[in-house]
Image: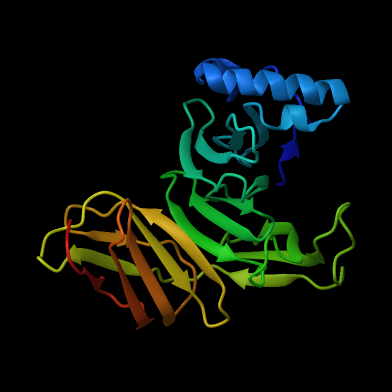
Amino acid sequence: MTAARDGYSFAVIRTSHVRVTFAEFRRTSAVARLILGLVLLGQLASGCKAARDFLPRTHTTAPSPDGRYVAAVRQFFNIDPPDDHLYLGPRAGPARRVMDLGGDIDWCQTIVWSPDSRRVGFLIRDQRLAVFDSASAELVALLVLVDSGGAYPGANEARDVAFDATGDAVSFTRAARTDPPGPVTDPRTRETMRIPASRLRLRVMRDTGQPVGGTIWVRLSRRDRADVSVKVTPGPDGVFTLPAFDEGPFPIVEVFVSGSREHAVLREVTIGDAPTPVRIPGGR
């Protein structure tokens, strides 16, 4: 199911499971409110829809087929949008923020569910699919459906994304990225990508034998040079499991410690039963 889009409503957006108001706006600083007011007045005077694009709102929602869960994309206040954040939770309870997209870089306007409601996918920048387990809200896969080719935002995009009946594969059509949207490359041909069954596990420790602590960024690369970056928080033993991305081996795996210059680079990493050890040289 592809989510409906909520136009440009920006005062109060309500559904049975999501409510976003100007409370976020009121919590911003006085300087930010002044800047917003000046920009808003100017844009409204010109009749430009951009004046409404940076206000807090929930612009995309999609309930699961069984009606038990809901996925949503909320935009935070930002004078330089997009600033999208992904939410997932039970329809009768609070939603959990499961991913923050890169401000002014990434966006999400499409949500797809597996037929059995077991998984939900958020299409990021119309190229990558972040797949979450609906019950645990865990990021289980991060798939590059269409590579950007090293350019931003990339010449091509994925459309008509859908899970198969099992929820273990996704299909899509490839199209040129144009404004307004152009025709798909070949409407008769759908590409299919299976979600890898194996996931890479890492154990990140300092060379002193102590866990790193805090958050870590991991960049995974494929043979075709497509890559993804994931923010994780290791357990007390330094172990964490990355979302499925490729069956491997990975030509390059880069590990960065947030808030520092500490990092490590691994090459030709295979997925095994035991966590792959990563040693962070030096220390704070």
